[in-house]
Length: 145
Image (cartoon, rainbow, N blue to C red; front, side):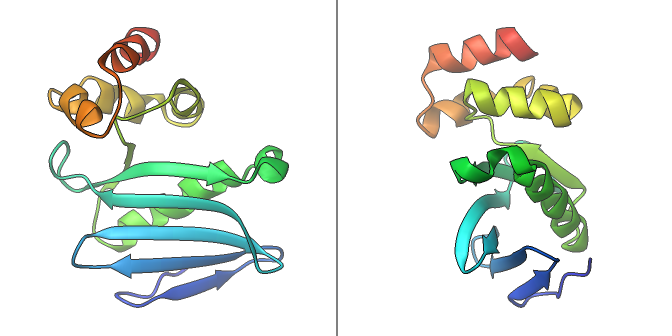
């Protein structure tokens, strides 16, 4: 799968179209999987230099409920990793403002990245700045780190 540098790009598979929107001034990337012109899954990535230089932060993955069991979240993570490497980053880590379900997803697919972000010195403060309740972050830290 190849990604065009600096331009919007579409990648096609047998059932999905992946659209990448690059906003270089903010270092934000949005990837949408569409099926029959209906967005079924979205991921939002942003540059994460505040916590871990050379990594992209996966801010959220949202999958339409009827498609959740088709593995789209894992496919979005795979495409996100490819995008990160193509753009000169080392990889993707979760955003520290995690729900319990998000932490469970990361535990299943990349526990090392989950622990790396949860143990990071500035993670709790960044999560709280983004609306996470302190108790929620502490509970996720206790359950998953």
